[in-house]
Image (cartoon, rainbow, N blue to C red; front, side, top):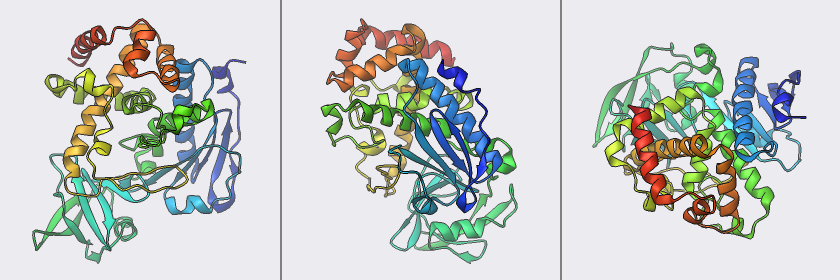
Length: 370
């Protein structure tokens, strides 16, 4: 039976321990705290699964997805020991991201040495500055991410929270907009994130696929950004962005349009590390989702900005390859690389001249983002 038809199978969500609802699909077991979150998660993970099949010609290896507003609780869930990759997708009003950091008001915050610090800003209009230390929110002392969440939770959505920060030895009050919870936006947990669940599911489907291949090259542990060390980072992020919903893709193209004169040359792009990885400002930890590495310095601002272009270029090139040579060319490129080929050699094995590809893609990118 075709995989696409399997999407039509009706699966009834049932109550789970710890207040979760569950849905089973051939490609994923999905847990979420509310029916709205579960519905949104099914939509996004299904989209990523279809994109995988279009690229690889087969269904993705099944994964487990846990949508949660408390990432620390995932380790305590009684998940089946079935060998599946587990993707915890964290959402909470006013924050989103990995378990040890949050993105809010155009800035990345992280708890460091008993204080909550701004490790970088990714928006020109952010009220925060790199290396601000958060002191209080609406008069409540804040020392951790949990303190932040407790202080933000009761405040009215769309209003302004007075956030006290220590900046250059002085305490300054900055206004921060209280962001809507996903359920308030009524667009679902996943689509409310700057990096939606379909992107992360794309990563995990690819990681699970690479693990299934059992290639000796996979055991090269020098590349650990997304858990698929066998693949260049542009391929890893390119496939994840290939799984993104159209709204996010439009945002990627808007970034590309602003930077057409600053595109990363192919000789660099095809072999480079993710800019955040390359910044050297990283910690590494492990959890149920695999390696987690987050910037931990004020210099992260530059790395975050560079990564924005890297994502946009990866997204655009992957879509160009799929449109020009068919979506399965991407899956074939992955398999060439898993067998030890460089990206250039993988392209050449598919009859694609890397130098001509760069010129063709740049012209296409300029035309499609105009």
